Structure formats: C-alpha cells, structure tokens
Length: 265
Image (cartoon, rainbow, N blue to C red):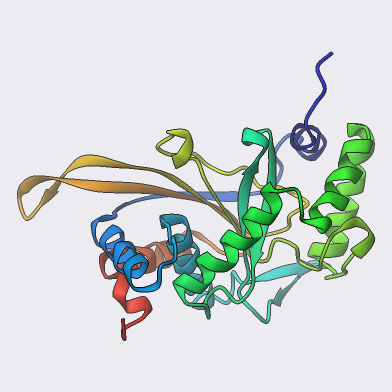
C-alpha cells in the first residue's frame, strides 16, 4: 500500500458528510488595471508582487469593512477579531503537501510589504526550516487517521474558538486568521471552490483561478480582456447573500481602480 502524505491523511480525517450551511459565490473580474498596477509596484519597489498578494490585500480591506465576518464563534456567540489576519496556502513537495503563511494586519500593510513577508515565510516553509510547521506536520504524520479526526477537531476548537496557543504542537492562537486564500491558477484551472475545513474555523475561503484572455462586451463592442475568476465559500452563520453582494461590489470597485488602495501612489 502506498504511503499517504500528511495532507491526504488530514483530508480523510477531517471531512465527513456536509452538515453546515455555506454560501458559494463566484466573481469574474477584468484584471487589466490590476496587472498594470502590479507592474508599476514592481518597478517602484523591486518586490515581486503577484495577483495573489493583491487579492489578499483586497480581501483584507473587504473584511475590515465587514466586521460581521472578521470574527469567530465561541460557545455559539460571535466575537470580533481585533485585527484582520489572512492565511495563504502554500504548495509544498510538488503539491503533495500544503503549508500556510499567516499575514497579520493584512489590511494595514502596503502591498510590497505583504509580498515581502509572504515570500520570506513561504521560502522558509519550502526549505523545511519552519520549526512550527515541522512540529504540527510530524504529529499528523505519526498518527493514524482515526485518531487524527477527533484530535484535529479538539485542537481546532482550542486554537480557533478559545484562542489557545499550543507551542508544543507548533500551533498559535487563531492560526488561520479570518480567511484562507489559495490559488489553482498555477495548476491551469480556471476556477474551483474551497471546501470548508472544520479545524481551521474561519468564515471565509477564497480561491483564485487562472487569468485568461476572454471576449467581453464593453460599450456595445466586443473586446478581449484578461479575466480572473475568484470564488468564495462563506459560512452562512456569519453572513447572508445580501452582505456577500456588498463584498463582491467592493472587490469589483478595487479591481476597476486599484489605486484606491493607496491614493498617494
């Protein structure tokens, strides 16, 4: 029998039949202005800013303006997070495993600073030098899936609801912040949806697809534009469809004019 990766063991141990209500949303936006803006930031700062960093910044701004989402549930009651923190998933070992980079106060950081912090943390993960990740990964690697299921549920409750840190297991309080962001564009996929991960205990999951040239209609004319599809999985206990529409409009506005993130640039 082939040896299972830690990621696969966690997947088997984590999910069962769906029971909770979720909202699934899809937004396709014109990336023309954002791509030009990213080129400008790269030229001015020397940092390799990407569309993933930009979306992380946009999500941070949207969560800041939607306090009903930026929080967690504890004993059935909603509690606000004091900061807007976002976790980016990082592919490891050619995609056989996943790590995460949590960026705190993402709404307060400049785009180039976010990119720099993310890049350093992702490089540390890929080089196998992240000690906290090693601790948590080694624990999951040693245990059978039937033990992992109740264990990760309990640990998720401790860290994601009570805000308890577990240094011995390599886990901080609220390890995934409020939102998890990942991308399948690098895999050549145009879109997809992130399945909610119970132990992460976050209300929002965002997934980026590939940027593709598509024919769109502008002012009655057919033109070709680079289009990006962004999907979101949102815990229905935190918000409803109307509020989701408000967030979608915020994202569209920033993609149409990315300079509003930093009017002085």
